[in-house]
Image (tube, rainbow, N blue to C red; front, side, top):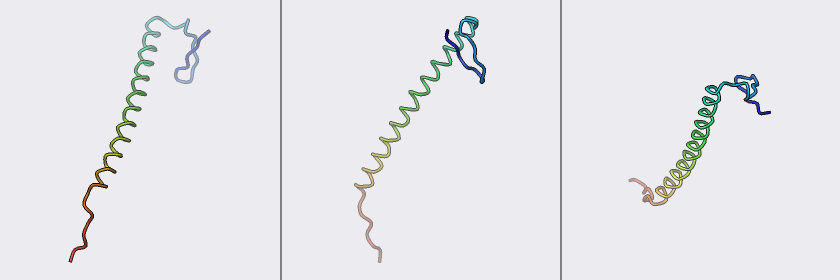
Length: 66
């Protein structure tokens, strides 16, 4: 028997209405998409950091001013 915990209360899936089950599925889909987007953000941040390091290495060395 499958259960789901919502707001610290456990419910049997079989006791939920079809509409409640549909809402639960929607939440699960959104949670998965958010996880995917967070992974993409982490990848982009890593790439940005690498580009910034590469740019820094290409900049001219600062000369001493008179």
